[in-house]
Length: 278
Image (tube, rainbow, N blue to C red; front, side):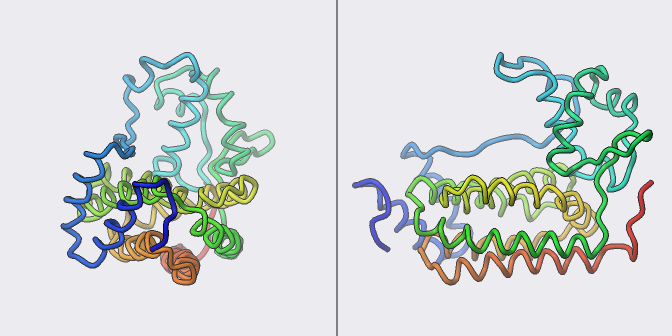
């Protein structure tokens, strides 16, 4: 593949590309090589609701921001179901905080499209019917296709190393069916798709895509929690990563579209006939 990064560092992309030809256990050796040569690695733990999460908050991150992230993760991971009313006393108790930071967090979640405000009733988790979900995926496919074409042509050695790091951990987690590992896999899934498209450097496209993902993420996670099956998604992720590393523009763009279509089809096949608010 051509020179796409800094002089002297292109060996990373050649090694990553070559590794796709081997058994997936070869990922381990590439991991050792990359980490030993100073490549930045993503890290993190599965989401919990325990009180220690609120300790040691730095000056740049306020309690409402922490509550926003915790409630967002709880909704995306199915702790609160689509359409469920969010009783503030109950939610604050579950998060271990007062209602004040929760009241500040909820409008941010509404702006993200994750919750909706019902007059005289309060906030509820956003709920979509199959027609709306299909529309959201159509928008997602349009945005991702354009971003994928731009991104792969601007990627750097650092982008390639980041993709390898994320997908390596995802591969390990996809073989485990317990809830914490599935939740962690989904966190990495969002990182993976963001890292694939971020090199496009199109902030408005990316913001619109993030909003569309927020609308359907809880449905996708609920479906996988029910089945515990990540195999097809993980196989497609590996193919996406391979195309990205190799600089195969058309394969990457087509795989990006097909991956969204397959996710949509799996989700719609498992939805109840009609989604009601509770």
